[in-house]
Length: 197
Image (cartoon, rainbow, N blue to C red; front, side):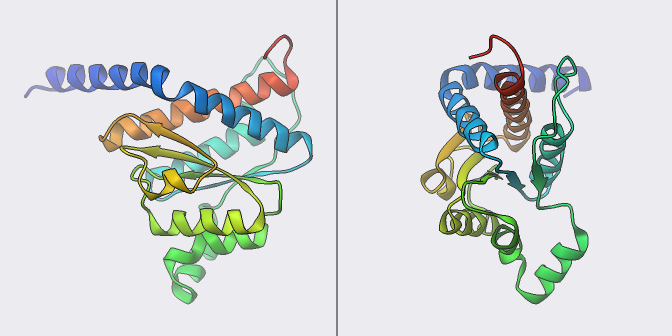
């Protein structure tokens, strides 16, 4: 297979997944926007967790909320934090309490009732993400899953499951970042824009 053929196939597949997201994901995206706006309006914060590429997506999206995504809006910071960015915390946790517990420990320490957690997992079965969601629920946080495939175990334990309709990890990750951008900008516009429902 030549590079042009591979690129064309990949771009077509990516486009097809995005079109499927219109059918499968928009209602849950809208619910997530409403949930986050309600939380932010009462002074609460947003936590993110994910592994690997999903850790990078967590950091990316937390930054969009904190700094801004829509450059036409002059808005205050929206409190958001990626739990995957502190290397000392993660390595100490991995060494002392086991890597499967690192995000749950951070949710325990940083999460408060009424906060939100966005848990990102392409499979929906990452044990440390499942433990983080369970700890979040125990502490009274609302939970949103960015998932893929059939949603895995997380689909049934998060409050809102946004499941990218693909089994290809690359396409799922692309869907996650697109979903995150839509949610972040929608929150910005709903809270600080004009004429946005």
